Length: 529
Image (cartoon, rainbow, N blue to C red; front, side):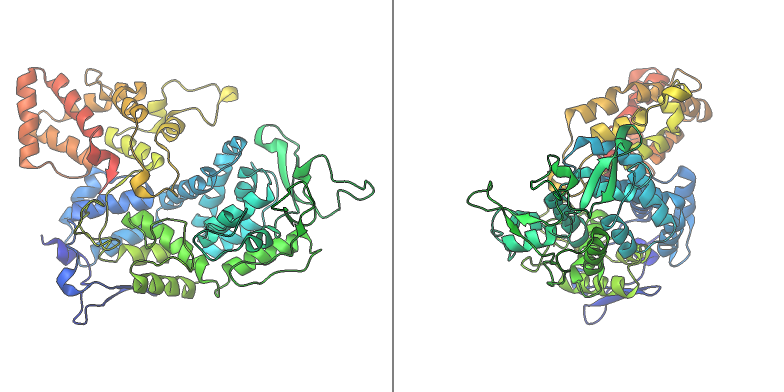
């Protein structure tokens, strides 16, 4: 089958293509003469499954997709995966990492399950991105019950840090670079950072009623803590009512009281405004259709995750002084995102219909590659990799966990998935070329005790043991292992290598343990092409 026949034609006579996806239209500014070559169906299926639902397809799904000659099957696949509940779970874990990897206080990691649950529930309910942003910016409550408090807890209520993270996550602007001095490369002035921080000084981190992370509770604090005292409170985490920009020459002196103002358009509220009203105003200014950077930030973020190369070099380092690649594509995606009322599923559909997403992948080091115009290989996130391991082994988390803990002694951080997260996790905001493997990662995949049980072909109940029993033909088994691990059929050369190893080893079980282990530890397994 010709792979190019399985997706829409993107080139037009004018060299500008328009792909219609429901109410969305995503242009691709690629001339017909340099349109990227489409990837094959097996590659597209694995790429889409990993990207959307965080796992790779099963052998049955692979065979069905390869045998399907229906026009538009790629778009239909994307629709099915976006309707899968696993899409919400996968991307909830992504947004959990976006916030918690930039924490300034490690106690915040204890609220990871609540953060994941908040995003999962909102994504399942098809909440718009502006609604999610507003909930996060205006959050109050106990961390275990209100995952939307994640940014505040991750920064333990510190006004300047909260402002910096809200700007980074929801506008893509690194305004914190202007905290101590005017930004060295962008237009932001020191006063603008502190005016924005003035939206957040009335957040209180007070003693909660519970234990663990619930020892803390996010609340509004609108009563002057200095009233009747004539001095500042001893506990600065209670917060002052207004934010002061420190004296740059002598920080011990009283600072300048700043009126809340949004650095992108100057909108704000008067001094004295209560916390709920000032944070609601901040959320409204940030998510307003007139603020182009709200849409640009999430479009660039999702594009970078799906394509592997962003419109901007930094995932969350945008701004009016930064020049994007493919500005026509970015502008069109943003217009449609706003017109759709910030529909995240629609954004995924539009990006995944582009020739960039459906292209053969090419390394970032390829000098002939035009940045942003073809898909680039990238390492799987920890949760994706763990789910891929489960799929390859035909196992579930309970099987890898071994003996379960007693009910009263269960630990939310115990088990194989948290172990993978601690070893393979990385900050999603890092540039992709800065994400590298490590020795602990290699050791876990090579020698991890949970995986060792699955690779043990001598155990009839192990995943490999069952495969050895069910597939008596070595050629068939070698191909099955490729389907399970790399989500594609083995090539003739790969089959030949496997059969040669079986003959040289002289022991079928030992030989296929080696083959299975080698596939799971391969670069192709750890990366999404």
